[in-house]
Amino acid sequence: MNKASLLLIAVALLSLASCAGYQPGVNKPKQMEAVTKLAVPTFKNNTLQPRLEVLVTNSVIKQLQIAGTYKIVPVSEADAVLYGVIDDITSRQYRAQRNNTIKTSQLLVGLIANYEVKDVNEEVLLKGQPQSFSTLILDPNFQVTRQQALADAASRLGEKLSIEITEGW
Image (cartoon, rainbow, N blue to C red; front, side, top):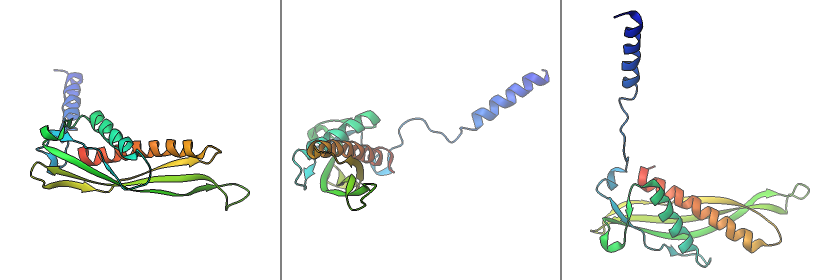
């Protein structure tokens, strides 16, 4: 063997050793290891915003399906059930007009929710309180832009909740 082939073998061995701690596959939270099928009933809405519960629930289901960690099934077939409550919608000034700092030009709209994942024995496996935010530029059609901001915040809430359930952080 010449020096070039020895060098190639050494490089190959080093490249294999560099990923020795990597484990392919799903990295579920420890409490959720036995769960393969998850049910997601419609979230409870404690706000005054109509149909927000459907928007958030659909977003959570979509993100869980994208992650692919759990199969989404009806409650009767599930290993665990994700119960969620939308607690609050927050709004605060994000940006003021340049000439008048009292007059708002952009709002920060937020959603606050609580969730619990319970197994078939009603034992709580996971729980948390994710929050999400979206910006809203004030214009003459405030209702439409607010609805768009809530849809964006619901999508972000679905992402955060999905990450907490599928990856544990």
